[in-house]
Length: 123
Length: 358
Image (cartoon, rainbow over all chains, first blue to last red; front, side, top):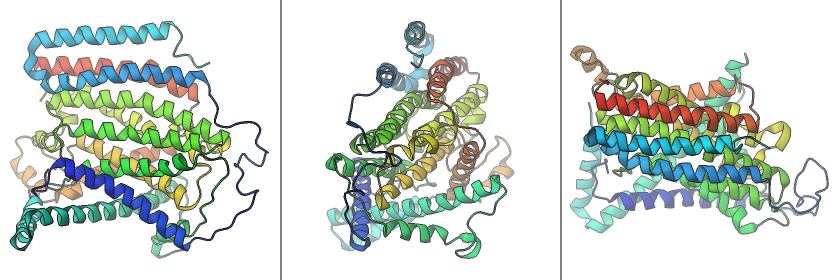
């Protein structure tokens, strides 16, 4: 809270969220009031460069993306542990540096293992 | 340096003079909401013109010139045009998720915008975990993109959303690690304190080699985070029409467009906050006269100037590099950028522990 007002940060975060929702809602309302409306069967079809759509579109899709999502999950959780360390890093001394060194070694070994296993190769 | 907080504090006391306390808070919240909304719209309009003019400049063209002097009113015409376009409702879409996606994307960018330090005393949300909060909110934006692609019932949007999701979550790690590198140097995550830490010199100078490497990593990761530049393959026009927002029309499409430009400003703002001192003027330790002259330039000019400069670099990327392939992009992040940013973090930790910084 830097504006020197007496509002809590949580209230301000809620205000900002409501502002975002309000912006979309108001703009959609204006657009609905002044935009033309028409309906035809052809217009409601999905646009795939003029080709007729074949089969379902909401399908299970390419496992490659899934593997990268799992990798991300692992590394993101590990970087979350690095945030509190980074704030207090200066006060921890050499012992703290050694501990986080071991932690990061395990992190890098994990990446090296995934790399060796061929997870990072796009198939 | 002038503290804008004095004005807002006086205004607060003025309101408290004749209103009860709870009503003052409500009035101030409404005023803040209006202010954020105005800033959001003005910035979006500015960025659309900025990108079009810069793009024209890089390609030896003039850009929009007809509407208004030097085409300055072109963006207003565009905005009005997008408002009066029809909102097409498609068959077989997941209606609820289709309409929810713009809300998520816009809201996440508005909340991030409210966290930025605009000037001395001009900051709205100031958590003690400020930077962490911004990162957390920015990762919500990915959800909106995935929902938009999934719910449109179109194969192009699905591919675009999947690519975008993979890209954004991958580069988020490098982005976070580049930020942690600077937090190690600063010892705080509070945005206001981060700016004040750079009173003597900006972090990019205080942290020398590791800070400069972190800055370069940040710029690359931020370009990928905003789906721009050489990393715009979620929207690759030749392959996917428009990527995840192919099926959105009118103002629905406009929301994605707005959020993309605002995200460009937000990543530039964070870069200027973390590396180039936020609103802090350019100070050289020991040169008191020089520092005093620099303090005369208002803090908001410093912040906007730095942010627009970094946006300029990111726009420059877009019109210089050819688009990368999906396997190249993922390999670049996981095999080069992330190990490099981890090593850079270790280097910075060693530098700070041994006192090798300024």
